[in-house]
Amino acid sequence: MSQSDGGQGQSQGATPAGWYPDPWDQTSLRYWDGLEWTGHIAPSEPVAAEVPPVLVVPIQAPVPTPLVPPAFVPPAPPTQWAQTPPVSPNRKFGFGESIKRGFAKWSDYSGRATLGEYWWFALFTFLVLLVPYLLFIFAVVPPSMQTAMLDPAASTDDPFAGSDFQVTPLLVVFVIAWLILLLVMFFTTLSLAVRRLHDSDRSGWWYLLNWVPIGSLVVFIFTLLPGTPGANRFGAPSS
Image (cartoon, rainbow, N blue to C red; front, side, top):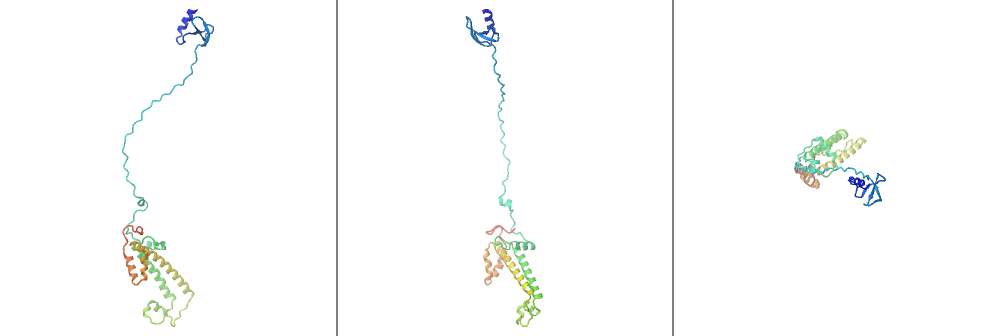
């Protein structure tokens, strides 16, 4: 029995030394100490825990990216050019546009006004004040006073002496409207004249020369001068 057991034990290549199939229980192993069977037993085929396969992903070396110089991008223009393109200092305004700009900036004493912008509005002011004046003479004033009002130097007599001039409601309304028109045109022309002086890089305080003897001639010459090219201390050219 021992020889058969020994041969059987030798045939178990995977069985550890000293462990043989249990002669009393073939499903177990029993330890043989060389003299006799001991009481040590163990399972004949221990179940090994299943180890899940490990997925091995090969690591690829990164492909070097070729160095390509970036495309040339021209620099952006200055911000002020992108928002407001430069305007030619020789910009010319027509009759209608000059009138519109004059009334739109009637209280604006900053900035500049071009030569044409100022004189087109001056022509409009002359016509606006002339027409009501003529209507007042021929429609409201008695004939005995018309000659004296049209040519004061030709008449030496008192125009009110012996005239039938009377203060009527129509005359009162006309005088009030005339005064309002004078105020509107005065302040509009004043702000425009200040901007005209700014255009030639002169302070608006030069306008006060109108109340000085021959000062009006100096201001008149200033308003005829062209504006400075490009921006000056009063801003960019009128646009």
